[in-house]
Length: 319
Image (tube, rainbow, N blue to C red; front, side, top):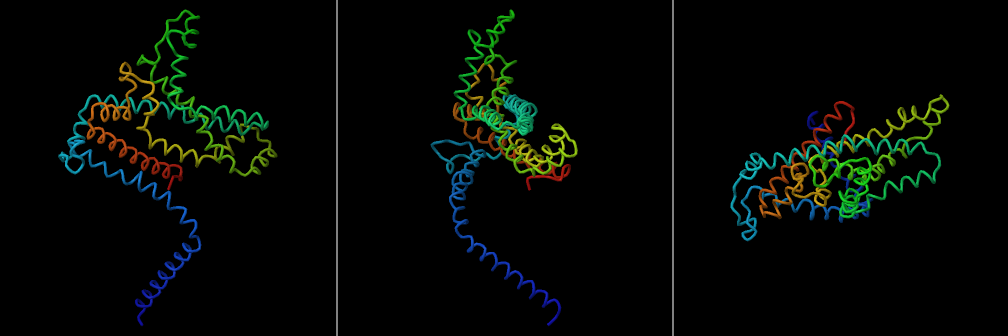
C-alpha cells in the first residue's frame, strides 16, 4: 500500500472516531441537549421566521394583496430613504442621542462598581445596590409621568427652584434645546444601576488573593482599583462596549415614544420612532421596513467592526 493510501486511510479512521465520540457525547448528555429545544424553537419562531417579512422592504406593500401579491419595486424604498430630508434629520438625532448615552452613561456603572467594591460595610453596600437597581423595574410610562411632573413649567420642582433664583420657567419636554438632555438623563437614572450588575458579577470572579498581596505591598485602595479591579473586569467592559456600539442606532424608542411630541421632532425623532410613525401612522409599511433593515445592517456592521478593532488593539473580542 502506498504512503498516500495509508495517509487517506488514517484520515478516514480519525474522522470516524471523531464522529463516534461526538455521538457518544450527545448520548451521554442527552438531557442537556433536550433542554436546548425550547430555546431553539423560540429563536426559530420569533427571531428567524419573521425575517421573511424583510421582503416587504423591496415591495410596494399593500395589506390587502399581502406579501405574495404586492408589487416588487427593488431598491426603490432605499432610494427614497437616502434622498429623504426627514430621514437625514432622524438619523442625526439617533446618532447624537446614542453617542451622548455612550460617552456620558457607559462609564458611570463601571465607576459605581469600582467604588461599591471598596465598601466593607455589607449592609450599607447592599442598600446602595438595591436603591440604584430599583428604577430599572419601572416602566417608561411611569418614569415619563414622574419626570413630567418634576419638570413641569407650572409647578414642577425644578422650575420652582429656577424661579427662586429669578429664572424663567423652562418647558423641558417642548424645547428642542433641552429635550435630548432630558432623554439622556432619564435613561441614566433608570438604567445605570442595572447595568452595573454585569460589572459587579465580573468583579466577583477576581481572585481575592490579589488584593491581599497588594495590601502587603502597601497598595492603597485607588491603586488596587486601577491595577486589579479595572483589569479584572476589562474583558466584560469590552464585551459590553462592543454590544453597545452595535445598538448605536437604537437610541431608546420606547423611552422617546412616551416623552416626545411634534414640537421636539427636530431634536428627538429617532429611527425607531420614525419607523413607528411611518409604518403605523402613515401605513407606509414598505418604507418603514426598509428603514428597519437599514438599521439592522448598520448595527451588524458596527458589531463586526468593533470586535475586529478590539482584537487588533487589545487582543480581546467577543469571538
